Length: 464
Ligand SMILES: [Zn+2]
Image (cartoon, rainbow, N blue to C red; front, side, top):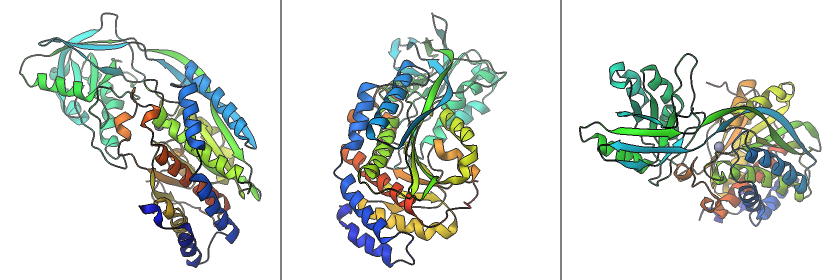
């Protein structure tokens, strides 16, 4: 049990370290916040409310509009000093129906999900022989004659890791597979779901088209359906698939980044940003991605607000719009706040499920590393270790370091995350209430300490 180390011991360790950047009263309040957060149900209540009362919230849809209304109402009811919403132009992609079946040699249905941004098919579908590739590179290297007129199947299985590093190598095929297939004359692209489960749910997610390349429909197969197709393809006879998608682009809509603040007592114009994204894919209810993040950062700020001691810097909760379709809300936020980015003390985003959080990473000036080590020491009673100084901060805040903004990464345990990610199975029952509570407690202490820290964090190490 890693939580047996008492905070008093951690406090002592932090204080005996060289010149503490935190005052005694800040450290004492840190302990009170920890006790409070570890018995609080606040983040669970927020997540239960969002997933039940709003549910799926794909950008541009009615669900997205209801999510924005829910966020404004919830943040106002929680009593923050300022609650406001900033408009963002977002795409509205409509999923429609998605059906696929093997028509020969052994006819049977397949479980699929259309990839976000995919075009639809004619009503009768697209039907052709399937050609399989192990990964995106093998498709890129293939002769055109192998691909022309066929349905491309990219059969690349994702590896499971706690930090989710199996995602990057495989997700390239989701983003670019349709373009590379179309360059060689394919009529559609299907890929093995980017996920670590063996359940019969397909994982959706964003795909892209390129200017000057024919747009072809794109879908993901559930892992067992990808297995089935792969077995059939080994039998040395043509495998024919019919794919029917009702997807379409419905043009731009207005959504909002929804923001809440606790005004700082000493440096109100200096910002500690804690973020998450409000939008979700539409197959599930977005409990893990990213309802959990919304709940974690909102409840963390609420914990600080309700214990009555004001942070010295402003704590700003940003619920970003339209992350899933390409960091659309984050880019709009950065553009709208260009003038004050030099006042951002540090930013972090929770967008990797419900936790628990096991490590604190950062991207700060070398001179501030001892202070970040002390923050990690203060988080150690919650089971958090100190990581490195090459953090990217999380998807929506990952574009801030290039403008000089320091970031932190509070690493959420993602061992099971990609079993549910972007599927119909991303629902509230997959969230462990204790993990969510721990993650919220970590964010509570982190935000409090950052808002009261006495050292500059800039200039930050350059982004590679
Ligand atoms: Zn997400």
